[in-house]
Image 1: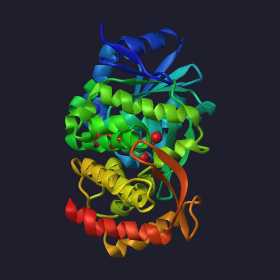
Image 2: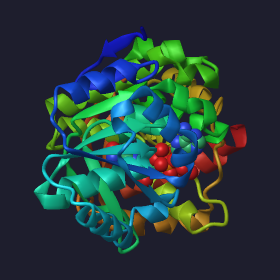
Image 3: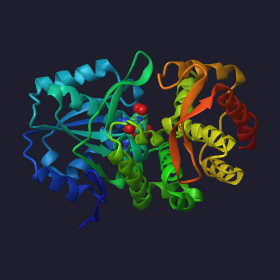
Amino acid sequence: MPSLKKNQNSIFIDESNKSSINAFLKTKNYTSYFIICDSNTLKYCLSKLILSCKELKNAEVIELEPGEESKDIHVISHVWQTLTEFGANKKSLIINLGGGVVSDAGGFVASTFKRGIDFINVPTTLLSMVDASVGGKTGINFAGIKNLIGTITQPKGVFIDTRFLETLPARHIVNGSAEIIKAALIRDRKFFDNINSARIKNFAEEDVISKSISIKSKVVKIDPDEKGFRKILNFGHTIGHAVESLFFEKPEPLLHGEAIAIGMAVESYISCLLKRISKNEFEKIIQCIGRHFQFLPINEADMTFFFTYFGHDKKHTSTSFNFALLNGIGKCDYDIKVSKAMVQKALLYYNNNICNAA
Ligand SMILES: NC(=O)c1ccc[n+]([C@@H]2O[C@H](COP(=O)([O-])OP(=O)(O)OC[C@H]3O[C@@H](n4cnc5c(N)ncnc54)[C@H](O)[C@@H]3O)[C@@H](O)[C@H]2O)c1
């Protein structure tokens, strides 16, 4: 009998997903199932899921192309079309089997089709286990802007089986560790101390995943609609999203977590400049992130990009920007105004000191 731990908000961590998904389906009366996956999760994960849950063996499978390009309105339209052709209705269940792309796109499909049908997430990447599949944000990219269109709709359950990580490329395990480090930094000093010197394989362990999820889900429970407190989850993301977009144009784009790692380094420095964390704490954070991530340089010429990018976001003004910043390791505040000059100073410091030091 596999261990079954009920986390919060219907999040289950279960060695083979077996008891939890089966128990969940038994409590419902769904008349049809649709599994949304991408070609990699179809190849590596679908049979594992169906072996654990025979009920799903007659599910219709909708396959997306792997990658960010699937978070696109034309792809969504195609999935809506397929659901229509196969008679999906309010008694159907969508199962998103994949990483953050599948849960973002599949969650968006489910939350809009017939004004919303039930969906569950079965995350298969570390990033989606600890972050993307939890919290209810769904979405697609539009007009070149990431996640511009979307909903906040909670899945009926999130079913985590760490065996899926066995086939995940190593770079994607490192990628997911960024969000675990973030969770520790914003809410739990002791957890940070535990993972500070951990090896990358430790981040894929159930206990670490479970702790990280419980941090995120507690924050989401307090503020599901991101009216205030949930914004602490954006630590590292104001700079990180700009870094992600900047590298998107380059020959070697960064993964989400890789950009967030750089974002956390810069935003930790801003926290230090504002005396919210000590120099010692700052150095400890940089060492922790630097053990797993590359601190790639941001050319001085690219710095204007950051301010143009922030200009698209209504939470910033032309002279000051809104950040979630640390308040010691393990605490974080949101809506902290930071001047343009300070952001520039932090980016320069990153380039001259953190990159070189790495
Ligand atoms: N909704 C949210 O709260 C939230 C939070 C963070 C990130 N995101 C979104 O998540 C997306 C990134 O998610 P991701 O990092 O999981 O990327 P992803 O979904 O693109 O998956 C990464 C790659 O791994 C492959 N893959 C997935 N599982 C596998 C497995 N078990 N074995 C082998 N290959 C596997 C996929 O096919 C893909 O090629 C971004 O679009 C980001 O915006 C959403």
